[in-house]
Length: 246
Image: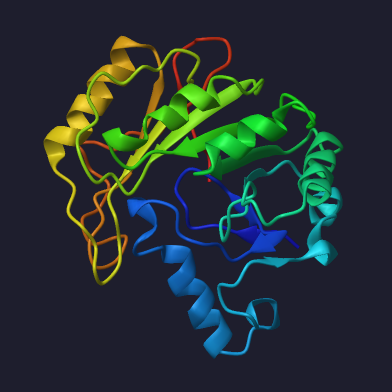
């Protein structure tokens, strides 16, 4: 069975790996860490080790059993390109994605350097979308690295957005997700940061998705930006952006 997701830009999550380690400021109040520790406390077997990096080979073949097409966020509870994940396990994940073309798989990483190193050893079917997380202007170099990856769809997650990002080069980037941080220690996001990114997306023909303002919980500030929601998704044919059906 797939795991339905409350994440606004996907339908389903698939976690062949759980757990991670912090690499940049966006990780400071990691939602996945809080969630994993909560699941450990209530005795869920998959999270017996809390947020320690853990491989789950037993769930590798889950997407093969889903008959209807899914939009799948891969490793919502980890980072598939963590250096401690064996290369052959990453390759196995990609082989499953390659063998299930009815699904669309979305992968996010903060470890863009390792992504580029491994890219040539991985298949890149059209149903695999590859993205990087960029929380402020200090980490836009991840975008340059993402451009080197032969994915049909490349996307950015600017969440939690912790500062303004001007001069955003979106060449080769089809989709940009923006969101504020949620949780008890959420850091604030300014509206002018979001509007500036939206303007850059429009100017460079990248689809723009506004996920949330953030706050104590993810619904605290809602999703309305300038009177409406923004749910654009990447369109490979450069036609008007379509909306995610959930």
